[in-house]
Image (cartoon, rainbow, N blue to C red; front, side, top):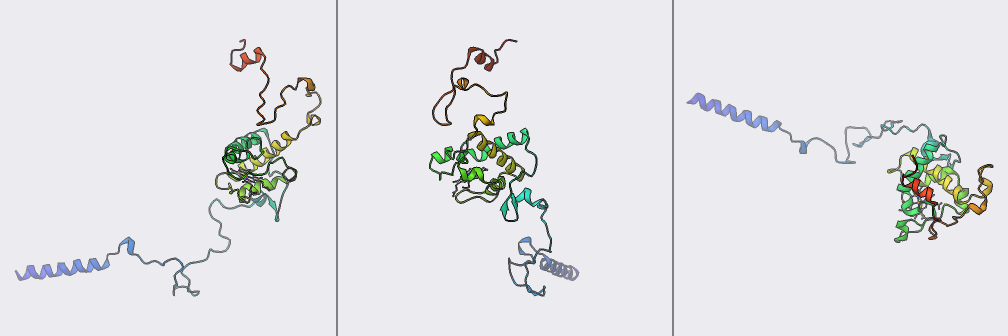
Length: 220
Ligand code: HEC
C-alpha cells in the first residue's frame, strides 16, 4: 500500500513536470511587430534586409524592360522586336484590360465610361500621339490620375505588347492614303464604307459570293 502511494506521488510529479514543459503554438517566444529587443545592439527586434537582397522572381536587371524609362524619362523604343504575334497579343490584352474604359478604338468612350466613369483622353490627341512608347508602359505600370495601375493584372511583356498595339491604333486612326504602300492602293470610288467607329454607319451589303463564303458555303 505504501509502495503504491509512493508511486502515485511520483507519477503526479511527473505529470506536473511535463505540464510545465508544454508550450502551445499560440504561446511561443516571439516579438510583437516593431517591439524592442535587447538581443540586438540596435535594440530592434525587426531586422533590416541584408544589403542587396532580391526577392525571388524580382531580379530586374533590364531596367528599361521593367520601367519603360531611361533615367527618369520615358524611352521611345520597344525592348523587343514588334512582330505580328506581339501586336495580336497586345490587341487581345488591350481589349480585355483597357477597352472597357478606353474603347476598342482608343477614343476613351468605353462601356464603363458610358456608365459614368471619368472620361479618359482619346489616344488620338496630339499629345498622346507624340508621347514616347515608354510613356504608355509607365501609365500601365504606375497608373495615372484617376486610372489605377495594371501592373498586377498585366505582366511586363504584355504591357509592352499593349503599348505597341496602342501605337498601331494611333496610326490606324490617323492614316492617309499616302501610308498605303504602292500597288495596294484601292481607287477611292471603291471605298464605300466611310463610317466612323460609333457613328452608327453600317458596312455596305456584301456581294452574294462573299456572303456565301462567310457562312462557309463557298464552292468546294
Ligand atoms: C477603369 C477605367 C480604365 C481602364 C480599365 C484603363 N484606363 Fe487608362 N485611363 C482611365 C482614365 C479615367 C484616364 C484619365 C485619368 C486622369 O486624367 O486622371 C486614363 C488615362 C490613360 C492614359 C493617358 C494618360 C495621359 O497622359 O493623359 C493612357 C495612356 C492610358 N490610360 C492607358 C491605359 C491602358 C494601356 C490601359 C489597359 C492596360 C488602361 N489605360 C486601362 C481609365 C482607365
